[in-house]
Length: 232
Image (cartoon, rainbow, N blue to C red; front, side, top):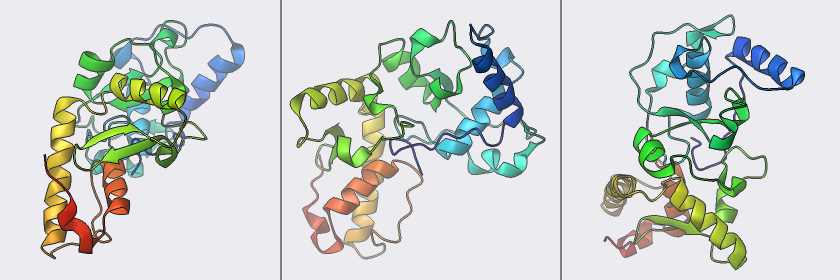
């Protein structure tokens, strides 16, 4: 899974859109007006992003789309030919300032939870330090997860200036947004309980959501010490 792990965002399935996009970029100048779902390549973009993000919100790790919908078998001739999926979320411009002139820029797109996009991030200015498809993005170098509070914070061992930038972006991207934090806590504490009582181990759990928080907890705790994880 990807999400706030680094997303390898390769447009390898919707290749007709990619060729159109690359020609626009080669020509320079502005993109055609961003018309959202009315555009011929809208679904191609959305579904290739879901494929790259494995159906998860790029910021919160919430599930948005069932796996069968973004299976590669749903593409033919570089176009998405599957049925319109029963999914949620919005096609989001990471840097909203690029939307007017570069509204179809692949590098600026993610699929994200609708409430986070409309109620939290909106059109706030962004810092690319937490842009999850950056080549040098490393969640373990940038973030820590509090298993008692079930919140992400900037890694406390890095310079304070970087911590401030990261913590600002954690808030901007809604990573600790109330309902996200609640669902993350519920999901992870159910796993903790199963491990505590011996029905699962850290190594045989494959999380279908919140994979970054799960991996950070896995690294922090082991089955012998699992009882020490505090609940709120």
